[in-house]
Image (tube, rainbow, N blue to C red; front, side, top):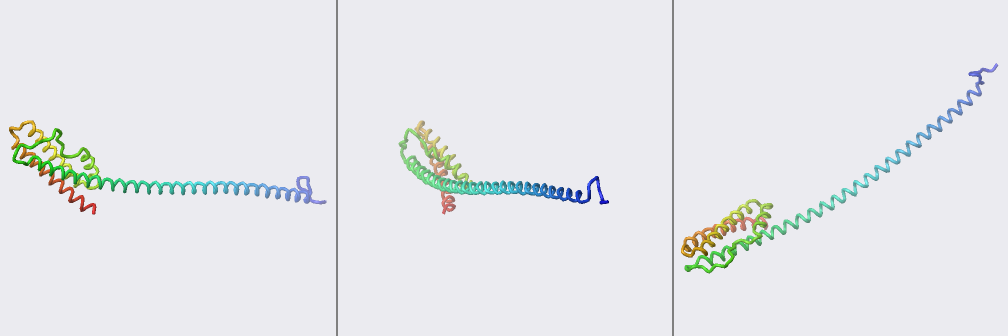
Length: 191
């Protein structure tokens, strides 16, 4: 009698086992194909992320280059502005000294202004580059302000003009000295 298991012959069991093995191989192959497809999708997504990151890095490098150029241009403009303001301020202080240091009562304009309105901005720009230059420019500004006050008093009180003339001249000389110190340091730095 042929051997039987579960009411089937050995050949039937072997045939069903072979079919089950083929089905199991097909299921395992399908699972492997699915995982391979999923891995390919992840690899494609990773490549896309790498490409996006590369584009972002290129854009960041271009932006940094533009910012560096702008900073260089701003520095060049600041250097030129401060240089010009120092030259103009020294020249203006010398002009005011000539105007008020005569032996007779000086002829004074209606508006008394020794430093230009842009001198404060130039001082701020100088501070960003060299605080010592800015410190000297600030001191010159204070002396020039005192000289302006002295000159206004000189204009309104002619009876005390000699004393105010001396005070104004002293303050103008101090301002000119501070401006000269600032200019000398500035020129050695910018050469």
